[in-house]
Image 1 (cartoon, each protein chain N blue to C red):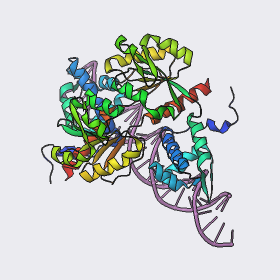
Image 2 (image 1 turned 120 degrees about the vertical axis):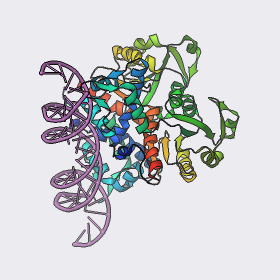
Image 3 (image 1 turned 30 degrees about the vertical axis):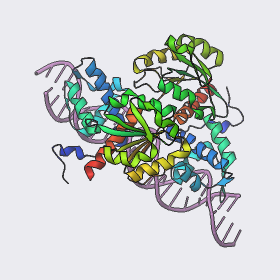
Image 4 (image 1 turned 60 degrees about the horizontal axis):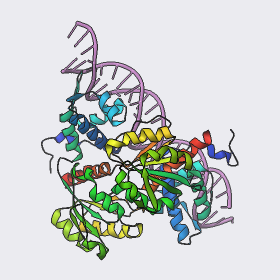
Length: 219
Length: 219
DNA sequence: TAGATTGTTAATCGATTAACAATC
DNA sequence: TAGATTGTTAATCGATTAACAATC
């Protein structure tokens, strides 16, 4: 299959750059909301917390969306980055494990406003199937395959205890999900074509502790 | 001030390695709990989801804790890594912003079991000051300075809405906190000697969406 | 034309990896 | 001694950064 209109977007974008695009997008949304129409790489870089050389290098992978001597049109660049990331469309998401964290995720407004739609909340515990969280019914985990098929779910979020996570991942993969955001503190084994990103609260704290300890020893 | 007993631990450990040490530590805890006494770099690497060359290189920054031809003593290596990270001691933590996410964090058992102790939950909203979450009273945000001083808090967690986050960070820094874990979707401005780590759920989802989009286009 | 700022080049830095000598 | 596995070396790869030519 050949590429459509923007055939140049087939270029390979480095992982480190991909990880920063959402940060730039958010900074642009903030600028746009504040009524700013144009910004320089220096201004945008400051808002995003990086240096301007890195920002310009990153943007250069997407194309040439600025004007020399002038800067970037905020709304135009915002659209181009959103398109590159893929958040001009809506992504149906399913969350599995509706404990404390699952509740927080289901209620997180940042998903909806950034191109993600929570279409289902699943939990293995029948006790929870009475609940409605953030306007969505909690349903049995066994409904996974049906929901994924019906709603075209491409992204799954795992917020279960560690012991259940691998099983949930297996079922997600079998159901056709190829992108997983994992909050359970385990290393998931998945096929090569499945993307897993991990958020681990205690690991983040441990990294802070390491540096904190060094500061304490240095003083 | 000169270093104590283990003067060799003054070596510089690369950031990428520091970020993986907690992963190795967790794998070792799992192995230990399963009764495993010895493991090779190959086994530990598999459990941690990295290749063995990287694991050995990482461990080499800490010292020489294995035995050629044999492997690593699980409990010994576990202790050495825990000591290097700094989680052989207890770190008092304060959480600010007790909404959905703050609740989830306060209840997260992984903190306690990994060397962190939530000593206070703070919220600016007086409505919440009645609450007890995970056995800890929710107190006014204005108590921050006092609590930090009394309890020797070194790590602060920000789980407030985006608009409040910078103010909270400023107050934390003024109170003497030098390590911050930020869940609010904003780039915090802090002095150079303050460490900020960021967890942003929607950014993680956006990175997945980018790759998902590419998979969809490739098919 | 003069000033400003992008997009790109090239140098530097840090992280990963394979291979293997050291050594249990 | 023979087999196994670490710890380290050196090559490779990818990311960052400063500098500046291109160009509005």
